[in-house]
Length: 311
Image 1: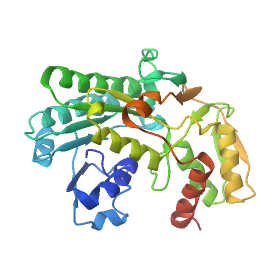
Image 2 (image 1 turned 45 degrees about the vertical axis):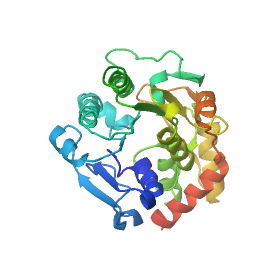
Image 3 (image 1 turned 90 degrees about the horizontal axis):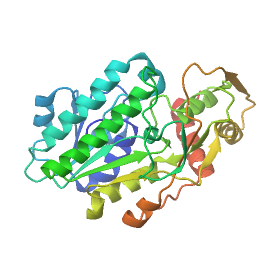
Image 4 (image 1 turned 180 degrees about the vertical axis):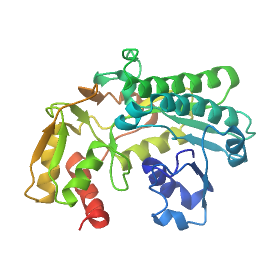
């Protein structure tokens, strides 16, 4: 599992560990693993490495039956700061992981994590056949979406040309206990438990559909288990958990009970106005059905952040 020490990877590994031998290959840039109980699990080993190192990938991957590729440069601030590195890691890194996997004798499935950002600035109930958007050349924000879209094309090319059983997933705004990085909910939760006002970029009218990590992992497991998934791409998200960023911030303040307010700051980058998935394909082919509603998911997430980061 490349990028396996991150938020989704650590959550997924926790479910898989009782019945599988798991290797996490990660540079620990965003580390949700080291401080978790999973770090002491006898069936889980961590190899600190970089997906740009093909020989190290080949060595780590020896004997693998399932490969899950999560490693990527992500997060708006990091992408804007390092667009070249974003393209390098997300394109060449994905090629390296696929190339290493293509030499495995008993590979059952290769799962590539893409992104919902491939749909561009306006993604309202988009299905998998909806036209993807590459954005304006020269706008650094789109290097992430374009690099992940290249990863999808690479994965499907290995399926069609070399018979590697690949599946791609497009996660929509995943959040939950254990989250690391710079996502909106993670940042809001950290500020709330520290008693700080919440900072919203722009006017807060941006619309998102939020997917709890338990639902994301459930969808991921279905992609690994169902033979019908091979050669396909799936939206994984929860269209019922749709709110504006302003409403999201209000809900988190209400859950905390803290006397905080929302502070608005101007946007200094291109943002996505609306992002809501159509998940009919995942429902039909995989039997995927998100179960955690937004308020319940936010409560669970708040309790986790309060226990670990509260004063």
